[in-house]
Length: 141
Length: 378
Ligand SMILES: [Zn+2]
Image (cartoon, rainbow over all chains, first blue to last red; front, side, top):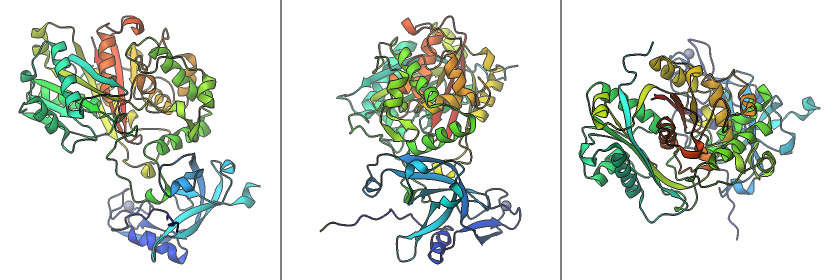
């Protein structure tokens, strides 16, 4: 019997736990600072812009634009070698920060810098969901 | 005006060891061999060394392992890890330690047997949890993300990236120690297998074994040795992020900051530099480095490569053949120093640059994370 290999699960201990579990409700949550008003990714326990501890979680629209990307053509990893070619991208969220993700469910040759994308979630454990992005194909056409 | 620190350290010995595809020596033994050869080159004994700087992915406490292998008990020790640029950083640290009287003879050393250990980049690199689910590949993904953005923003072409490797192959053809000496064409680079768009196999450095060592001492001690020596005129270092996922700019690096500090200490600018060594783990590094270190405007690195950085050009870059064609045992920074010293001592044979007075070396570590610049002079 073949064992199914899953997408690797991140270590979630710390401030980021809320980030990983919020996806279960279909929400991409990131911290915003009450003191300076800026958002950041990845979640930290103090604001990386102004050092304040006054962070709150905001629900993102799930919309973004591809800032840059690469297509991984080969992999030695037991899960990702089944996924090549796959797209690793940095997406500029509508709420400001850049985040790393995969662009999925697309022809990898169709991915472009500047393309609008929307978040989807993949459940990888009982509580953790990983944010991934899909091309907004309508607006590309 | 140079700062008071400028010239407080002098490089008196350099050597590489066991550069190649296979070796019978251990990592610590290769570091020791390079150290002994560098000491011979300096006219010093291992017993004269009172400061040890080292880092490799193999040892948790690299400078401590090295000192034990050599049988010495130093009074100054530094295993700082900024990735592959660490040794250029160590050179700056050694300068501070020598200038403040904390030590008199410093050894900087590195070795790796990564080729013999299975051809993989041996690295203790940890991943950010936020990149783990996405198949981020250390280190190539980050350099590919940077190259893609640079091409989009500035119109840098696939051929310009290729020309970095082509130029490296022209230098390597003049370096008997280079492991890949055959010429490479733009077409060959552009047709080599895609690894991570837009980077192809021939955009990537070699995977080899090798070690290297550098001996640095005070002005006064160097004078007594009476050898051909090279002064450390400026040094700077910085880091902007650690992990690929945490990069905020994909087109401008912390080389701007490390370069500025090195130039200021030396009282020199890009126009004073006669020969350049930039850590070329990937072709995009050279383009980013030339821009961020002020050899051209931001976005014009590709054009500068087109203009020529090879043998006979006005701005000779990576005269050893670099990590792309000379060797690359995982952390290349030590070889940037060794090659710059050889050029300034006019011992570079067929690849010798015409009467260089000032060399700039720039190391890049991690995923465009760590940056260290040094300016050397005769
Ligand atoms: Zn803040």
